[in-house]
Every structure is written in C-alpha cells, then in structure tokens.
Length: 504
Ligand code: UN1
Image 1 (tube, rainbow, N blue to C red):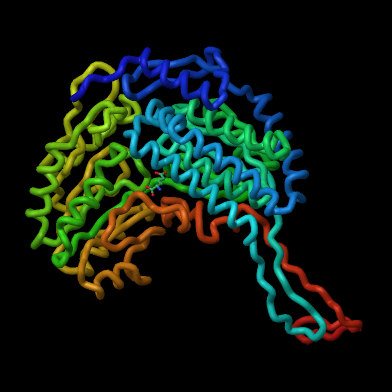
Image 2: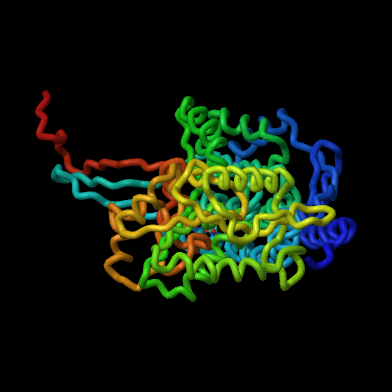
C-alpha cells in the first residue's frame, strides 16, 4: 500500500476546494467532518437545530408558492446555471467526494459528471413535461391531463453517492416546480455544503427564490422531522432497507408520497457462451469498484458449472493485484471503506459465510495500516445461496454460486429479498432475451454483457421488492415529482353525462 496523505494535507485540500467553491465552513462542535482516508477528524461543524428544520420547511413552502408559477423553461434556466457551475467546479467537488467518501479520483469525477448529465437532462425536460390529450366519450368535450408542481421535496441521501443522488432528485424537482429540503448523510457534510452552495449561487445568478433549497446538516432526527411533516409532499430517501421500513409507513400515515432507493443484492449470471474477458472486466469493476459501496455493487456471481472454476481462478488472480490505498493516488483502484464499523461488518459477514460452508478464494483481510479502514475485496465460493448471501453487506464481498440450467440460474438470481440491479454475460441471444423477459430477472435494472453498476442517468433508476420500488433520474421518473390533474372541458352548450347517465 502506498503512503497515505496526512490528515493535515487532506484538511488543507478540503479547505482550498471549499474556498474556490465559495463555502464558508460553519465551524462549531455539533458535527464532525472526517475522512475515511485517514479515519480522522477534519473540521467541527455547527448543526441545524430542530427549530431551524421547521423554519427551513416553512421557507421552502413559501418559495414553492412562487416557483410553481414560474414557467418550466425558466425553471430550467436555474438548473442550466447549476450545471455550468458544476462543470467549473468539477475537480473541487470531486476532491471533496474523495476526501469524505473515499472514492478514487476517476469515480469521484464520474460522480460529478453524473450531476452535470442530470442537469442537462433536466433542462431538456423543462420543455417536455408533457401531459396527454385523451379522446373524450362525449361530444364537444376535451379530456386532457396537466402536470403541476407537487410541493416541497425532502431528499434524504447516503454517504456513498453524497452529491449525485441529491442532484438526480434536485435537478428534476426544480424543473418540475418543486422546492427541496435536503438531509444528507452525516458522513459527508462538506460535499453537501459545497453542492448546496453551488445551487445557492445558481439561484442568486438567475433570480430564483432564495429559499428554494434548504440544507439540513444534522443527525437523523432532522430526517424524521422531514418524514413526519405534512408540508413535505414527497420524501425521496436513499439508504438501507431498515431505514426505508421506518420511513415508508410514517409518510404513508400522513398520505405523503415516498420514493425509496434501498438495498440491493445484485447478481450477474455468467453463461457457458459468455465472452469471459468481457465478463471478467465487468465483474471486477462492479464487485470491487467503489470498494463495494454502491447500491448497484455486484454481490453475487452465478456462474455456469462449465466456466465457474476458470472464471473464479482468473478473478482471484486479478483480485490479488488490485491496488488498494490512497484514493488520490492515480494507481489505486480500491479506496477505504467508509468507517471501521463497515470493515467489522465485512469481517462478520465473512465469518458467517464460512460457517455456512463458504470458502474464501481471494482477499478478505483488513490491510493493516494506521488510519482508514482498508480491506482486500473478497471472493467467497458458496455451496448454495445461504442466509448471509441473501443479505446486503455494504462491503466488497463477491459470493460465487454455480448453476447447471438457465432456469436454475434465474431462480437463484431472483431468490433474494432485494431487486435493484442484475446482468447476464452470454452470447446466446435467446438466453439474453429470456433474462430480460417478464419471467426473467425481477430487478429494476437488467443488463446484458455489462455489469450491474454504473447506470447512465437517462434511464429510470431504482428497483423492486425490498429495494423500495422508487424510480429516480431519467426516463419519466419526473412524474413522481409532480401531481397530475385530469381536466374535462365542455365546449358545447349541452351537459352530457359520462356513461350515458341521464339526470334531470
Ligand atoms: C447508489 O449507489 O446509491 O448505477 C447509486 C450506479 C450509479 C448510481 C449508484 N449510477 O452505480
């Protein structure tokens, strides 16, 4: 492992990036900004109080009242400006993502690129919030639907995509005419301050209502206030299934809307006809990339018996050479886990996997170093899909299962509680299509000849079952951020009732 930067150097680098973006650090001692690179504290920060959360929701509600009548293409102008600022500060924001989330440089830049892309998408969308015109059954009537802004959107986001997930929600919500209150992960306050400040600058430049976006730097109680507040029309939450189980019924109890992006337990099927070179590359990026901390990370490899040994041998060789360490070092491919607790959870999962009959064939050890939680990504061959394999452990563990028939592969694939992302490597067109068919993969994302992670923003992102059912980002995911009105207009001079009802 290469030498790690000192915490002092990380602090200077963070301070310089924040200064270029224009952020003044709200120093205090309620919250800690830290870096998983050294595991040490960077800055003490002031938290948003419960009273300020209340106030922020009120201010956002007032801003929404103005924003909802601003023409959508004019709303797009704000998001276009945000996109331009993100381009200007791409490197600064990526620095902060590396410092606080531990992502390697290329992935941190990729995350900011994803933000720029969603801004572009949203700007286009601002002129395409189409409703349908529907054939009326009555003469002299027009039937149509109109999409209106929804209200205040509460965004709750996780540490692993500390900025991009906010931008998927916020860029779309803003063009849809909504206001946003954001409760980011406590683990990434500096990224949140930076992203939020760039939006504030865009708001100022375009003359949009100042309180259109509010940032809550606080612990989970602030998230709970958002969840329970009837002024928050939509709660869009990314995180664990456990969190989703708490959020969903509370929002439902007040008839609010939720958009949930929860756990994944993503699998790749490797068929006997697969191009193994391609599969190898796809698997390594999906399983070991981002140190296994994407919700789309590949966690289960379902390999045909004829190719499994060869594939696992080749994977183990690549795993043995994966450069682990300082995410700022351009040779590094695997940065730190977010906390010591994450490394402990990985070790506990590996113990359980072995107790359930698994055999570790690569990695799995903690890299001894002062500071951050660095681990060797692990490959574990399992005799069957045991209890631990059916759980999501947010760390780089790839469980390998083997299959004989395609039906068996699909059954194994779908036999987990989560349903986010999936893929198959095959050169057999029939198999590829069957994997994508109604009785194939049950996930929200199903791919052929690429891995499970790294989805483009143009498609709708999300999954089924315990993943929560929400769809964010591209395609028509915008509809979740608006309310639909069905309009019947009678332009005749007779009142005709639907369904041929006669009255009077
Ligand atoms: C997440 O891990 O919360 O598809 C989101 C991907 C990324 C998004 C992941 N575009 O891997």
